[in-house]
Amino acid sequence: VSPNTKALLLASPHNPCGRVFTEDELRRCVDWTRDRGLQLVVDEVFALSVFPGVDFCSALDVLDASQSNDHVHVVYSAAKDLALSGYRVGAIVTRNSAIFDCVSAVGAFCAASTPAQALVAQLCADDAWLEDVWIPALRERLPAAWRGA
Image 1 (cartoon, rainbow, N blue to C red):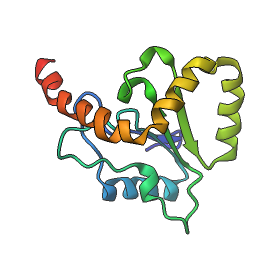
Image 2: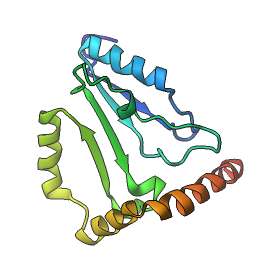
Image 3: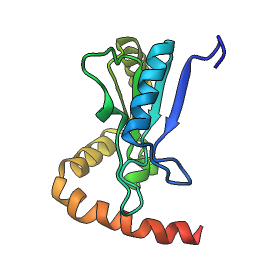
């Protein structure tokens, strides 16, 4: 870490290895970055794509409500987990109003198409399909895809 360091970037699950940060590791990263005045950006675009038997923990799950968490930003995309890479639909979760305003301003000029947004919203609203069909199938195919790579 140098005086020029502004942020810590994490990918969990990691691509291509599939490593998932534990709850304790994420909590330590949140605290470490807060203590040093750094931003923490966590890429969770593969959140549903974990190997069978691996538990995914989001950085959002470890935030302490009694602490300031406006330095934590989680990004997600439908591209990987929902196999919709061409749709360019994603999200950022942040409590930092400056980051939110900046992303909102950029989004006004490069937002995903209305049909793409509607499709992703419909897919994400179908909990039964996601939990009973899509996610189990995704996790079953992952080890075979990894071996074939």
